[in-house]
Structures are given as structure tokens and as C-alpha cells.
Length: 183
Image (tube, rainbow, N blue to C red; front, side, top):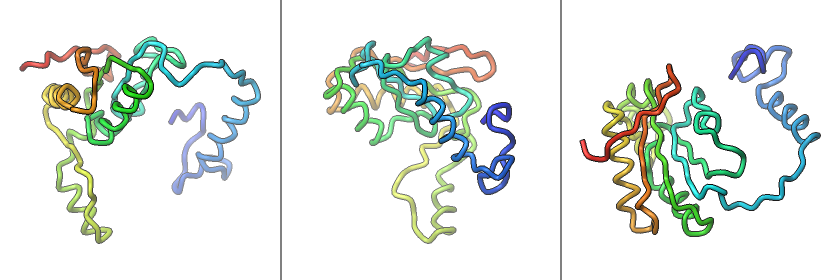
């Protein structure tokens, strides 16, 4: 969150002036909607591509890839790893909304490189219930991109697996580095 846009956040989600961050986002939406003009586009991405990327706030995918509204489906999660839910979204994207290509984007300095599956155990101890999901932590970002590419390529639910490419986004330079699927 940029402090120039939203002020400094206070504990409990409050921004300067007593508003919460969500209050400020909703107000920004009102301003956006006041000038909004329905572009009349459909749900099918113009470029027939789905982008799977990390949720890291430092990555502005549309700007980094030169994308416009309506160009792609964007699927983001912690690490940009291909999980069962990612496969679900890609399956819907391909089968119902006609995408054919998948670009996978991990990044340097990812928080998942600092976690382990012990995170799940710690959560269980804290809340009394073990999460059903895996953390999907990793140490080698290149290898994790390869694993994600393999998961997409071998999914029986995806009819289009011939144009799957994986990259690592460098958060200090903004450049993508392509990962060879074979180490």
C-alpha cells in the first residue's frame, strides 16, 4: 500500500483520520465508478492467456506485461504456485472461456522461501485446527517454477498444455527471466 495514496496505516486497519483502509478503498471505488463507462467486453480474454502469479504487492502484472483490461485471466496466490485451486481456475478459464496459453510468474525474494510446512503446525497449535491446505513453501524458485509448469502440463483437466511458459520476475529490476522446463 502506498502511503502517498492511502496515508499511513494504523494498527487494526485504520488509516490516518480514523478511516479504515477498506473505507478508503470503497471511496476510491465510488470515484472510479463515477467516471466508469462499460467497455462492453465479454468475459473471454482477448489474448486467450491466463497469468498465474504470486500475490506479492510489488508486482503490477498488467504494467509489467503490457496488458490492458480484458486481455487475460489473472490467477494470484501465495508464491504463484500451481495448487488444486489454480488448476480449477485454469480449467474454467480454458474450457469455459477459451484461453489457450498459460504464463507462470514467480519472483525473487518470495516470502514462501522463508516459510516451511511447520507454519501449518504452528497454526494448528494456535487455533486448534490443522489447515487442509499445504503451505507450498520452496527454497529454489527456479525449481518451483519447473514444478508448477509440470503440474499444468500434466493436468488431465486442461485441454491446452502446449503453450505453458514459466518465469521469475526480478523485483529489483522488473525483468522476467524465463525458466527452462528441464533443469
